Amino acid sequence: MATEIDVKQELTKISDQLKEHGQKALSEAQRGIAMSEGVKQTVDELLVKQGNFAAQLAELEQKAARRQTEQTQGAKSLGAMFVDNDAFKKAHESGELHRKGGRITLDIETKAVLTANTGAGVIADRQPGIITQPQRRLTIRDLIAPGRTASNMITYMKETGFTNNAAPTAEGARKPESSIVLTQSTAPVIKIPHFMKASTEILDDFPALQSYIDERLTYGLKLAEENQMLKGSGVGNNLNGIYTQASAYVAPIAIAGATHIDILRLALLQADLAEYPSDGLVLHPSNWAGIELLKDTTGQYIIGNPQGTLAPTLWGRPVVTTQAMSIATFLAGAFRMGAQVFDRLLASVSVATENEDDFVMNLVTILIEERLALVVNRPEAFVKGALA
Image (cartoon, rainbow, N blue to C red):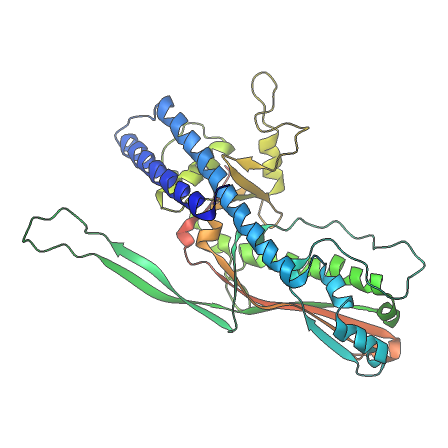
């Protein structure tokens, strides 16, 4: 089985070939020479190979991360880890949480959220679980390289200029000098919190407490997180989102009557020519549905099969659909190479019996919050534009 090193070497080789073909096509297009079908087919095949290797690399990295998380936390949901925590059980058994001013706070790794396990406690005489509102599928964080920090500010160096004067030089002649311009940049750590009220009886009903944390609080937190990572304005207490910083789409070569698929293909080429091979595409669900419904002259679907189960992809790149994107817009990019999320405080769950009028109303406040920073260290690794 191929290792991460093997896959990275193949990706580098294919990227070099793509760059060579792209630069040649760009040069010929400037002279009015159209890309031949043979060259176009070769480039398409290279893009598919590049996407496949990129998917393999992402899978290897994700498997390694999952193994580490499962070894540390076990395959439990956030709510299950909370109700199974010794500190919570001790506070519950001692009656601390039922007394005025009772409070407990636990920091829990939200990436360990897998299959929920039912905690021990008084079994409620009701159907298990909660009938919830529809939830959006969250996927942006999965595309970005993970990281941790113990500070309230990430400081990093960004390359803003490179003059390459490398050239053949005669013996005894002065060698050419190249230069790199580096600029110090910062990304603040922000906090994303929210809380809900519940009856104090939920403290004795472990499945219900677990459901509150898993089904609503965690989901709401991650929904806000995804919107911030993608389109945060960078103003005030907001992340500077990837889409906000991405480079504008400029077609590297002219294609007559370009379709939505053509535009996405050219966006991948734009990233490749900038030395950042894309490993993902982000679209609004409506636009991806429109692409999937395209048919040829015989009535056959061009993309996929209505009965198929394959994950959405274009030229080997995963297609992420999210309503955080506006309709008729797209984002293509090298997510793992161009951005990284730094967790300062993983999801922290707090339960208190005294907040506002909780004590006299027999209510409990359940709070969840996290602190994180997003670094887009290579904005040119991302291409954004409109599907005209």
